[in-house]
Image (cartoon, rainbow, N blue to C red; front, side, top):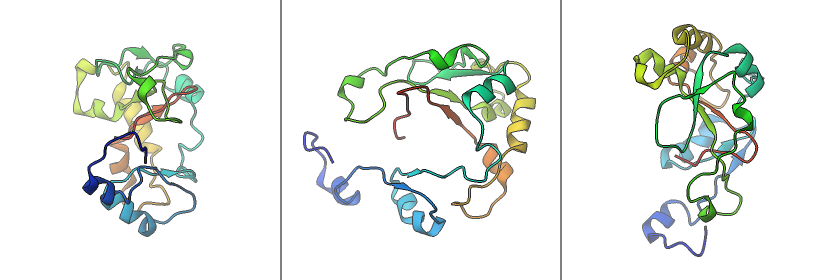
Length: 174
């Protein structure tokens, strides 16, 4: 925890006095369950192990889904105004207020792709060409991570989000 931040004592007790996000590998759902129930952020370093999408990179997404649209998170709009096949990986934009972020926190805005919401018909968001075909490919490539209980992988695909993190970018915990 940071000493220069006033924290409600009840909140500090709930988070055991630390706001650090622990990182794990080779973890089980049962071991993660307490953190999930507390709403604590954590990182699973090998979370994509064995998944069909584990090898997907920014370059892969650009070539496989060139006419899809994404957005750079941290702006004032939920419209996907960046074409996937564009040179977005070299776009570095800093979060407003980043100078006040804690040491080690990412300061640059990541890119966000929630194409599965195209099935909800949010046309104003501008999904790009053939969004239903793109969503179908994502559903077909979805699988349940080893650290979650068994369930229908397609249900996970219907709520999928993809975050792309060019150098120095990252999403704030939410």
